[in-house]
Length: 263
Image (cartoon, rainbow, N blue to C red; front, side, top):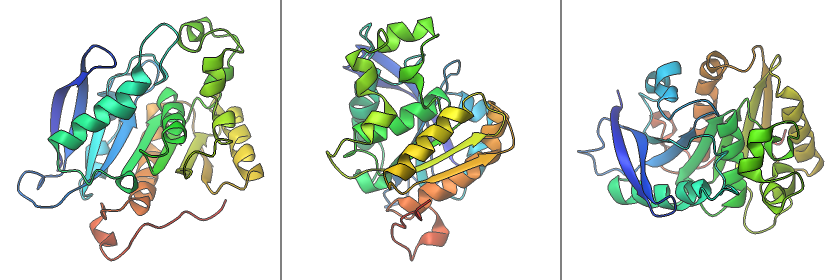
């Protein structure tokens, strides 16, 4: 079973220390091995501990040679918000530097994946598309894919600014796939058939298809819930391990990175 540590990560970007849950392989302290890293992002009304409270994450990763990192990021959508919260810089820079300096990580793009639920699903795809030098793969469960385009959502104004703002454009997933600065991350998405966000997930899937961008998109029974996420998290973890160097799954010891099939 992975060892849980709850640590305080200094963040120059935020000007404070941020609580982070870290799951470490049981041999982390005694092995010479270096590990791939998966960062998991929580949803809008959640905390960093929700992955442990509402899913069987520890059981799912128990056989994986993988460090799992879960930061507390509030209702930020993981961007540098218009009201001055530099959460994007924290996740992409401060947190990554902290984890690489305190744990036995491989420390390469090819060994990093990021995933999330709802707001965190959007955040995972957005960060992987904006910081292509950092993450090789990203997955989303029930992602808030169209958040920068939401109109009837007043709290979003404090995050993204008014409709049509530069911040909204710069963090719009439909725009980010047009960027050419670096290789695209590998993408895995799923959404519940009864989820209120399913239409925007379908729209992004079609956009990726139209741009001939390889990805995986699946729909499953269920709505917008942690139960849905828990039911589908094992497949995302398995997919992520197939993307990363470091062979986080012992059964993959003789394999290198496997590219996902075109959808």
